[in-house]
Length: 202
Image (tube, rainbow, N blue to C red; front, side, top):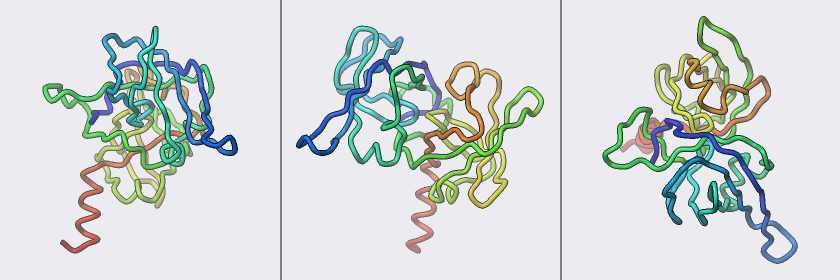
């Protein structure tokens, strides 16, 4: 469990692809440089919003394995060495919930449709998967590449609008987002439960 409050940015240092029978890939391993201390094997870290398990702790970072199912709904298969990533260690029961409840289960990929300056903030229109749009409401929450953001508006049937304050842009990888860029998104888990309850009539 996470909050969407990025605690550090890291860098993909190495990408290793594994093959199961020599004919097709079965997964990949990412080695990530990170400033964390005291990491342990088996702990969970959100990497650009996806909950991944630390397989090995290495000097200056850690490795994680990305299975095929995770690759199917994320952009990890396209990552290369040098790519910056947002990082968050798992939430302790005594921690402040500074963002919102984030599971680290990426729902899919969104595409930046528009970027505009509004005062001292930057506004982004994101074209999101239908499953995310269905659980999105104005002033609700959405996770973008692991960052907890408030939904400003719903400017279209498949669009979600968010705004970034200067601090968030400066301390995450979202500062470099431009039109056409793709990002991981996770819809609000509370909205998912409400949608499920309404669809089953229970």
